[in-house]
Amino acid sequence: MSHIDPPEILLAQPRGFCAGVDRAINIVNEALARFGKPIYVRHEIVHNKYVVDELRTKGAIFVEELDEVPRGGIVVFSAHGVSQEVRRDAEARGLQVYDATCPLVTKVHLEVVKMCKDGFTVLMIGHAGHPEVEGTMGQVGEGIFLIENLEDVAKLHFPETEKMAFVTQTTLSVDETKEIVDALTKKFPNIIKPRKQDICYATQNRQDAVKFMAPQVDLVIVVGSKASSNSNRLRELSEKLGVPSYMVDAPEQLEASWFEGKKRIGLTAGASAPESLAQSIVARIQEFGPRQIRSLPGVVEDVTFSLPKNLTN
Image (cartoon, rainbow, N blue to C red; front, side, top):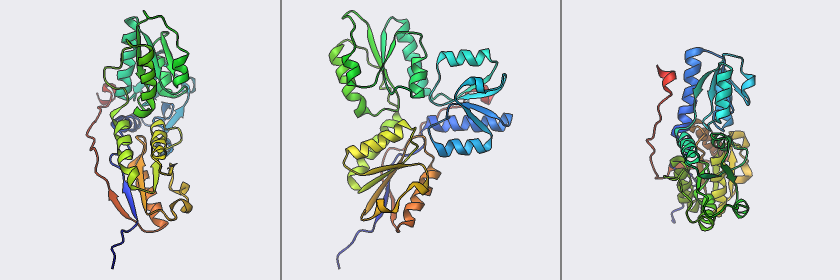
């Protein structure tokens, strides 16, 4: 009798929360525990509907602009970071601020400020309208330009003597930025690259895990919300590797037809998606037909970031 492999769900490693997201959510929870509700949060703390809804039920109020926060109120800045203008506005309104900006994003902010101070024209590779891009470009009043694609590179005209440097949005894929970086270095041979790749370790690790998983499966499910840049990149990456992929942020979004005739299902989760949500989606997949669950080998992340001093003192 021939051996038949059972249907499986393969779990990518690593997946889900990164240290920056973990820290941001802990900051909101700690502020709620210490000061009670309401705690205002400027912008979604992380781009995940499940997380935002859960914090909302605990008493967090999410706002887009600071004029929605009463004078003297408590506000948390999201993990994506904010511009200097937003910081000045918060001070002028007498707001008590707890900053949940991811330390890796802060690193890029500091690089931009230093380079502009040193007379460099800075190019930022990223997506227009993304809060991280707005926050990073808002660290300086002038001298920074957004690059979204190769056409933007073609439009750049600076003299040979111009001191040029670039940074990147942390949640972009390495592959996605490679073409742009190559075009920039070709056009401006002396352009200064970031000291260390600005694409964060978690974004890179999750993409590497998808590259490892995709060839082994017939379908990839990415747990993540539409607004999540790094979750979108994971879905795009598996599609590019030739595997049909869907992104969901609730079990009821899964459709039985996706799984028909699919032997092996791969599952990953963006850096802002909690493991509890990933597990509820695994459970829902099991309802369409029993499958064995197998965790794939991969990088084990042990990075942690401490909470802001003004919240722990």
